[in-house]
Length: 91
Image (cartoon, rainbow, N blue to C red):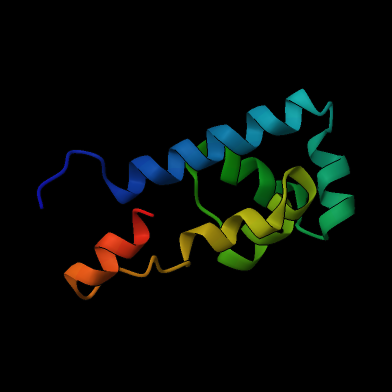
């Protein structure tokens, strides 16, 4: 499937989201750094380039949001395997 939305675009969108959330919650980069043990230089680089390790992203997101929301990325929706399954799901 061809898409013009790239992984790099997703990185930048995630960085923008985290920066906006941090600002909305009135948290400084230094405060996030203290709460997460992620160096403030790493947080600044992430907010400007989108580059960060997965673990550091999770540490930051734990402070900014609900880490359980990440689970929605890995949940597998069960697909019906028969017509009977489709009919049962409609009831």
